[in-house]
Amino acid sequence: MSNRNLVVGTLIGTAFLFLIDYLFYGVLMADKLTTFVMRDSPDFLFLIIGYLIFSVFFTFVAGRYEGSMDSLSQGFIFGLVIGFMIFSLTTLIRYATEPLDMGQVLTTLVFDVLKIGLLGALFTLVLKGTVGSRDKNTGGGH
Image (tube, rainbow, N blue to C red):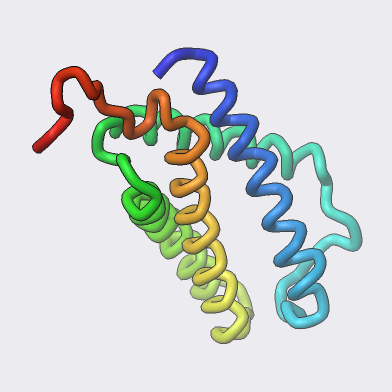
């Protein structure tokens, strides 16, 4: 993967994650996720830094699997696997150590895993030149 595509993927991932989290946590679930201890206003600097770090590594790992992410469904499944690996660990640890409601924990877990699945599908669309492209001159078949 070229540096240009790493930067593009990082920026797309950061923007996507910020917007979808804002819609879910800030708009749709703002009054429903009540047992989580939250700040009055998030520290946006650290939100952006976190999204950037995640997006750099997600883009890098996705670029390593070029050729195996040829379709939206394969990108989605790739994202689901990465999302489940990360969020099942962090969510269950939080549930084990914090006084959280299981329903709210499961809601955020499902959302977070699906969110990363969508990010994987988005990458197959946007970064088609590097993630999932096959050389048509060589047939690219299995």
